[in-house]
Image 1 (cartoon, rainbow, N blue to C red):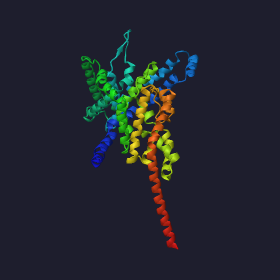
Image 2 (cartoon, rainbow, N blue to C red; image 1 turned 30 degrees about the vertical axis):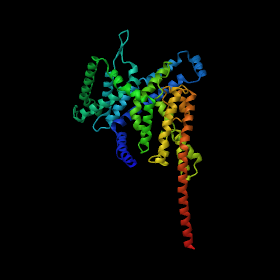
Image 3 (cartoon, helix red, strand yellow; image 1 turned 90 degrees about the vertical axis):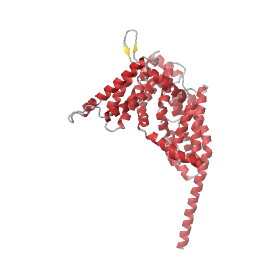
Image 4 (cartoon, rainbow, N blue to C red; image 1 turned 135 degrees about the horizontal axis):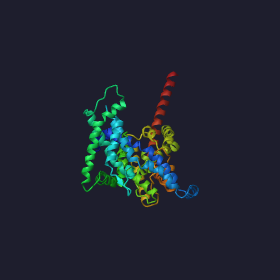
Length: 444
């Protein structure tokens, strides 16, 4: 039975995961969302400035810059957080189009941008001014950005490959030639989206965003935003890593729209001085489940650095400890290794699942402050990142608790690996000593 399971994993599941990891669409999602991260981090800095969790600081800023200083600082947060959907559709479309031959990625991304804006219902104020609601360009528009970025780009690429384009003479500058090549596909796409929007307006949904919210966004968020969704996602992160596949990239590409959307809602609540609505978010995963790297291997790295008796594990610990402090764990993943190591597979899967539970329960019950939508850079050392992500010392304490629990789980497996390494080193030393003795005896 175990052989059948092993065969299924090796022959079916792992190749499938490998194909997913290399899929142009999943890679486009991952790299497209990466374009959003600088804006989120910059906006987070301004949010920390306006919401820094020290009352004396808040009072001092108010006395120096006036009672509305936090609102003024918040302008910068709005300029970043409120356009992440807009930037995501450009990034996803660009990365996807770039993966195809003979397609101008910039033109494709601009057509996708136009299609995305066309789906958003305009708002009219009392003075009769019409404008695009900023909320639809931010986290609320992430699912829509994902769908438009993928489907519109694929449609655009299909038309380009079918040669539905104007061909300009070679003497025409490439930028002009690409613009004219995009005319026919762009006109078709905008026309199709326009007709869809008109058709939807006659339904009970009224708008395209409403359809996406009811049919896709809410159900996926209801699952992915729960402890059960986080547990399933984290299991697959660890499971894929065990076979050398970057599980965080694969799963993150799928879950990013959900977790980043939750993050945006938390940030909006903090700015509005309302209770933070979501426990599970991108920061929940990054700063409390993946602190020290996937599998929370920072505990193992520090054990090897300080307590390993074998020379091999001691050396790996020296190499892995410093990167682990910045949430980089490739040295230990491939150096120990954990990849394809059935003994280390157990704690590597169990530890992050335990952290999901402890973190969720702590935040849900109010023992620990929830993440406030601040995108702490993923290389920020633990303890500091927990404090910044929650705006409260309880976040740092929770990280420390998770490390202690994780360390307790890792410890017996570390001892097994250390003993095995010592035995192997002793065998090698004994063999070398015997060979040296035999060589000395031969000389005499």
